[in-house]
Length: 495
Image 1: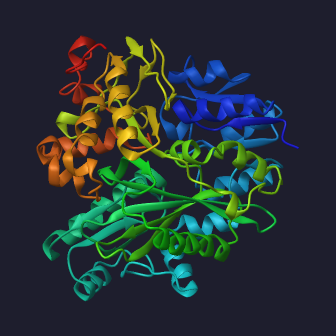
Image 2: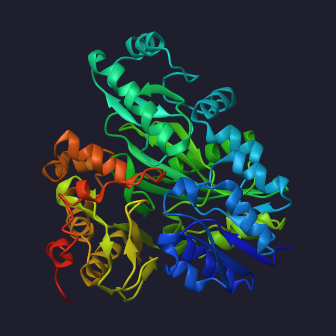
Image 3: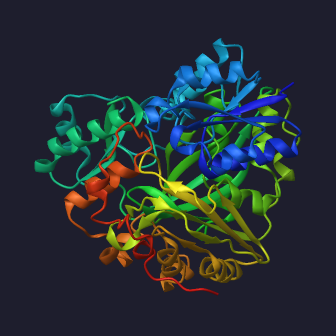
């Protein structure tokens, strides 16, 4: 029986996990890098322990230090959250080898599904529709050229062993192919320690739909409906909702059955998501499996009443899923906005600094998952997510209205945030009627995201989850006036 868990993460997801552990009467241990010593997650946990200096490779990605910390503090299990080591099967295996429980899928299925290339092979054999493209990674330019000619431009180069938009490049012409391959390999190596990449056909204007699944050690499996995740910047989701505006009962049944078939085929045994792309004719294609808890899991919790983090812990503790598929009912509509410390007017450039003031929104149907407080330092080493704002309503329109009010109430001073941008997006006429796709921001907010290529390179580097470089603050200061935080806040209103 799990009695003590080390939370191998930081920020809002670490806080979320620690709160679930507290409610389950399970002791929690937080880890921290030097820059996070006084962070919110370290204060909420029963214990906290240092694992290294600020660069993530020396702390939150330091596998041996984290496992040693768990053993030193007498933990039974490690919860990886999302990002960092959450989908690293080698870390998963090390945790098992140390006699600890990894709160997630078994390392074998994680290895299979963690590789997008291997996942494509498995799904093709299982009869799941996949996007046309390579069935193996390569470093051979000629192979990329041959496949690109075969399936036609535009194509998408992707990191095989990662996610979150890292190591991903859209290529429209052959002359841009080689440079895109090189850039994708470099970014993938930096973010995931692997330069394995492949290409697939780029579907234009699809919906990005994922299905939340849960499967236990006894072969019981359910899905908890879909989430629409089409509003993205740099291939990373920023607004999610459930149910999807395009979903029909028939399509939900088909995609839900396919999602279950996916996890059964890989002997998956925890919670996770099966991701699909859906074209304008409602044809769906397998994209990948995220073998972890998702950033956007709260909207599923709000509409099903099921605590996914607790379910995840119970499955890892060898308990059967207490629900059947017919037990899963969807109540109302929920939307999540990810609140980032970034400048939405300048290609979402990260905005490091100190939180000087925060006002959390409240109201009917409002949930606020946060990892910050007054005095929190927002560093350049990690992903700049600050919090997640979730709004529930009986209808989609009610959820949008509640989200708009809550966003206006959410005041964060000291760094620039994406709050105003979120207000503009969810109140755009096309969003309100559900006409969303993965190119939504390019189509309707291009003036917000078109900056120089050098600015884009800096933004991606500073936002990288890998955190394995100490970025030069002087470079970031062209966007962040570090000596005057009041210049960082942009337009804001008090309500």
